[in-house]
Length: 318
Image (tube, rainbow, N blue to C red):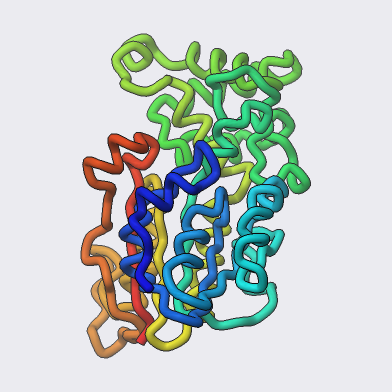
């Protein structure tokens, strides 16, 4: 049994959720009858559903640190009894979780549509809400509290390095000056504060909201997203059976770069232009399935504009 048309699958998903690069993910994972798969970012369950429908008897262990994922998984748990297990946890702690090996593992980074569209989660400045930004509201501290207590060095790393904001000095100064005023408590006032710190020449010529990069950096810092990514990559590869595939979807260069470098290391290739080690010192553990990252086609971009920055890379364990 082959997988149904991805458009048909998408139509059956939870409303508002469109799994990114679905056809391409299925092409690399190539689910086979009775195969075991690991979806490290369940989200809305779109990729998980497609894997379960792709071949008879496939099973998926899915992971999500968002407690709201349980309710989204209930229809799938009922539809595929005994074939889906949903674990509550952060993929960055995969190495500590119950052992198991898989034919394929998927990691779809970034925010889910549900998190982005839920104003009360505080990820977006499109709606005024408490500045929370936690992927797991049970753990860590809200962004508002983090902004009030983080050191200047921590703020600089978030805005300059994680947000890649060229005017980071101005933004960091504005954040420090706003402490104790209540301006850091809500997404609307936080976005206004950041935008006001951006010089007019950049504020009015940019195609994106002037607070976008800083919000990204704050979110990445609050959730330790890059730290979790660095920890999960080797833990995930270690759980692949020989011939198994690890596929990762990233949405910006800060995510894609460590994935690219780790995959090149697995494939015995130079990790960067500065990597001049002789070939006999490299160990080849995998073969690349993507020479360059796979990106959405015109049809997917038209149907799901949020997919525009997605980049998919995959390797096969040898």
